[in-house]
Length: 465
Ligand code: ADP
Ligand code: MG
Image (cartoon, rainbow, N blue to C red; front, side):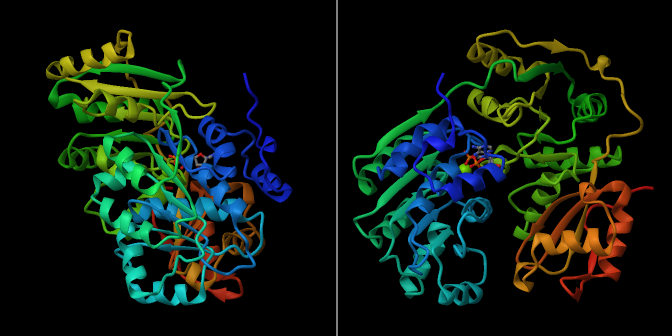
């Protein structure tokens, strides 16, 4: 067994200290396999499942090479969607804290041009964006990549799926030939090799397609009739009482119906689907991640690439016809040292699909009866936190510390009862424990944040007292 300490890597002491602060005590397997090569300057193709820590695997490499005194774009990360680009930017910013003044900019389609042009005029060291928009900026001349050292293709499989292959090659043409190219992907379809052969130089390949850690995911199957299916989800939740559950449906309609059924039972459930406006999508994800929404209901497509930590349960509301997707779904839970539940609801019509899952897993599925699912605890499942929204964000120079200060110092609330604080461009989301939510809201609305009055409101549905 090899030890996976970051201190074996040629990283600056300040970076090592920052990793400690972030709680990154050991490298994940994909980091251990790819960082020595990436830090050594090799081109790299790295494949590992969602949630395995691929972002830090490339972010540490590009940050190590960054010269902060040169105020030019030295690294470009291409991502398939704005949401993934935002997640990558956040992770890079966290990792970049070891050094002062590293400027990371997100440039994605769907957002208006003018603010992006203004931000570009101020300059940046690292740019994260979607291929189409990056190309657009290159063509307008608002972005130059002449000083680029590192090109990263993140979620390359997904970018290919979305038809970005041409845009990516065009962007790559505008990068210096003398560069490092890092390609990360959850799967390895044929198109990846083709793209790599065009864009990369003698890339090293790292593949970690390991099975889920045995025993960490506890799988149970329940036989249901169609009329029991949606109701069974509520039974599972009120019996096992997981704080955060991701429920997968095969269709959007099923997602929609499930959310209505759960809400009618007093369970806080939100739907994630492709038709949501970006702002609504952000709000859904923030509420789920900060533990103020018990259940996120999604199709496989909508949930793809999402980084969701601390998931106690996954529910397969339908059995997917694709065995690999099943493995991918249940692999969302049971991360790190935690155990996770994976529940699957199957009708007689779906038994063939279950059979294929058994075959792939090399063991028989474990079945339980719906009648075992009696409510435990008192009342319906409720999330521990509530989300408040402050109308003001990064553009108003708000930082998480300002909000925390307003709540703890001015408002007199204990810091331990305040959860995640997400600062977006125009809004800030604060999770607070349900019991102190009223007080927190009035503290924000009557006090000052960073010396200024702010407006705050409930984002979550109003908590019952
Ligand atoms: P991927 O891109 O492979 O889907 P991410 O890079 O999004 O995975 O990482 C998943 C989560 O794991 C993130 O929340 C990240 O902060 C966390 N993480 C990454 N590396 C480590 C580490 N070495 N120790 C602890 N947590 C880590
Ligand atoms: Mg990723």
